[in-house]
Length: 139
Image (tube, rainbow, N blue to C red; front, side):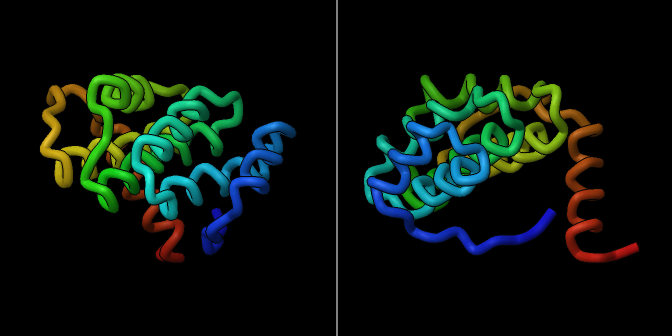
């Protein structure tokens, strides 16, 4: 996993990546929209659009985007987005599940959403610890 600074992309570049379904660009674009859009509804809908993408990184970043929007704007469409986060907590990919835990925690913290206790297993939490240790270069 490599950290990359997320840039503010133009709508034209974002639309081009969407039209081409360019995975390498989409995984950055979805975070760019979540981080830089002034319109939380547009950003939320953009993330919804890619929350079921076939590539786990695009899907996972879309889920992470929900947490960013919650933190930055303090608003999200709970009726639409909460079920997507819950579904992502059960995703087949551990990266997506880890991002879903983070998004759930952000929604709880910044939006005061309530989640059932069974959402987000200890297995997922162990993955988050391992991911942190790996990213930090700790053996």
